Image (cartoon, rainbow, N blue to C red):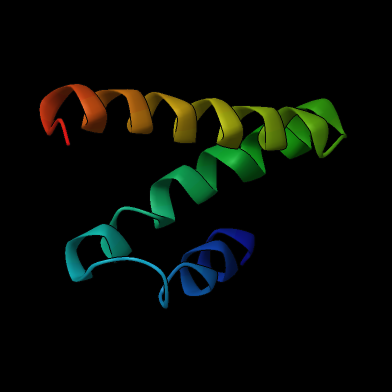
Length: 63
C-alpha cells in the first residue's frame, strides 16, 4: 500500500514513463522503513537516489 501511495504521489510531477518507475523504489523505501524501524533510512536513500539521478542527468544532458 505504501508503494502505491508513493507512486500516486509522484503522478503529478513526472513524465509518463517515469510514473511507472516510482512503484519499485517505493517498495525499496518501504522495505528500508520496515527493516530499520525509522523513516531516516528511506529518506536518506531517497535523497541519495535523487542526487545520483541529478548527477547522471547533468553529465548525460549538459545545459
